[in-house]
Image (cartoon, rainbow, N blue to C red; front, side, top):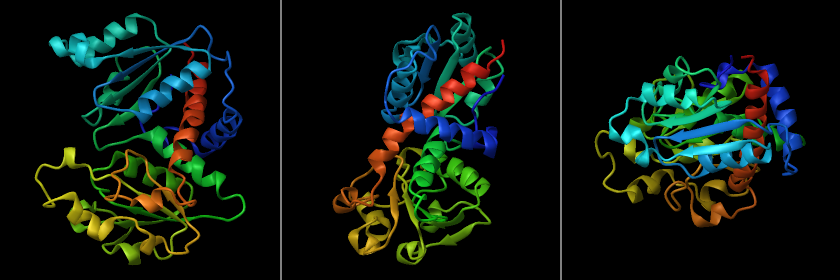
Length: 293
């Protein structure tokens, strides 16, 4: 049985085929590919885009969806995570999408269930479907111009999105530059830059990240405004560059990216959301149809 815990759980060839399928799903038409199948989403952390994206994806494929409200579930009454997984598995779902504040939880749960587990984000570790939809978006904009130089900007050290994107972008041969203040920069062999203008000057793609204040053990900046003065993407930074401007959301406006750049024609942030549904449809189809129980 195959799970999706990390972006590298799919081979390069599998990802290419997945993207071909996602391209078909962009028509937004309902299908009955997963009719009679059931998918459970269990999110122990808040989510708007990822959770709703998976639910829309499942319903467009004809599957039924059960969304577990953790605040009202038995886990809030002391039930262990493993017992929760065992009880959910006993209901016979065809896939479970899980998000948790602790890294490694989806991997652990995969040992306790008899259906594919899809990681919807675990701590600062990984967010594989976000990386897949980001790469899919980049490739759709690389048909007329080869885009291979990407600058990832922001709180990279605490970002599961950055981890999964780096994993996937390296697999596909991208030239990656990390741009962040020293305390947001991970230990890495990749190119690093501590100055925003310098770090994005040669980029074909700029991926801005949210400052993960909830994952900081100590307050680093006096305010987000102080961070924004050095690392907010503005018109002055973009100028007339031929770039894609990306962000996994939610965007801290005028902290990660300013208002004018959000509405700039080079911004593909809402396109990422649209593409996310199609990519997750392809992921659900692949994992459930390949599940040989």
